[in-house]
Length: 587
Image (cartoon, rainbow, N blue to C red):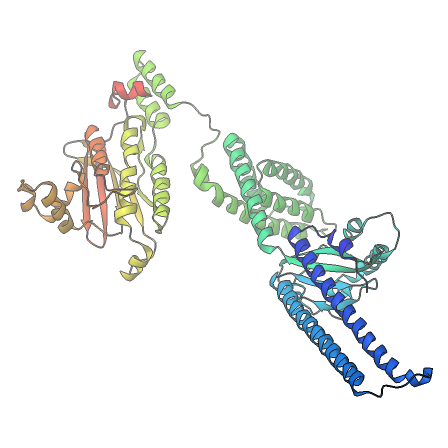
């Protein structure tokens, strides 16, 4: 087979492959020249010997002197020796080059094989074919190797014939685009197929090289990126059209409940189909692709002509209802952390600035509106469940835990979750980020340490909120933030106090519970050096100051090795008097 190196390599897109190919061809041409030289030399030696033997035939005297004979023998011996050495070098180089080429081809991790006009595969192939194409292609037909379905064999062979025609309107790339582009791998790996031509000097196609490449990882990464993009689009639309999204979900829930009725008949099909068609458009509007596919398939199934009885219709409807309910629950699981629990929604939501609500309450007070009406407005409209105000605490905590390469279970919110006016306590809520840092840096241990101590690798933080009675404050909000981590070591606290307060003796007589309260002291820290999260001694002090500014108290309780809890109590009031003028004006 003749092959034009220039014609072949000009169609290979990779510059690396082109340079390697040119180098191999150049070296191959050099050794072919050596072989030609060897053949010419051998021919000359043979002619010399024949000429010496043929001298009498031409009436010439044969070689009778020893000197010419010796010259001829030495010449032949040297010539043959040189030629043997040259051919030995060529053989050695070709063997090494073949081994190097085999290593190069197999190290690429791609499947290489070639086939001719009849589709017969050559004996040369890369080892990766056994893995990527799940067969040894040598001697097999390319249609068998690529597992072309029986129904497509005729078209496949027609395109193969067109490909090898000397003249046709379509180019090589145009024709191979109709050949299989993906290999149906048994493990669902994405094996992409690429075709490259091998031409002779005249440019005629002699063979085709097939290159099989495993692009499973790249394809998976692309699909994941698309899924993230779809998810981002979904979240953006949900936030922009929250009320419409809630209406859509409510409509889906109503449909699921209606489909569960035992009185459904086949005559109700049109009503259900209209609802499904409307819901399909609605869920796809919010980029809920999988849910949309479930609705679409349910619509197709209910239109099946095989459904002729009420019982068959109910059975199909219940089957689709189950799939729809499962898919909807999956969607809610994805968005619950962003928009809250479905049972917490109360109809259509309109966004109003918090300051406007307070201004409206103040205006009502100035108009001498019944105080009970104002109180009811503040309680039901202005105030919010306190756990909603602690969501940023939860997000901050998990961010910090990830920074420290630790593990944490979802925060366990317990208690009665009382409603509070957030504007008066916003500085206090903001200061809780320091407790987050304390838990992430000092409290929760590394997974390996926790396992060694007999704990779960992931830590647990519990937030308990309720209304309590207090002798000094009356009704108060009780917030207890606890973890199951390291705990606070009183010995370590005393060591630090001996350095920061060496001249004071009060702390020396305190019990362990009293001494650990010094974590709220100004500039107090148990760290020997400053880290990204702690060590400056201003964190817990800031929390204590905010609690005290509200007229509340904060106490830390701890058991070494078992965990720490911050017990916070602040006055509970839902009225305009709870707000200072500075707080209100800041809004």
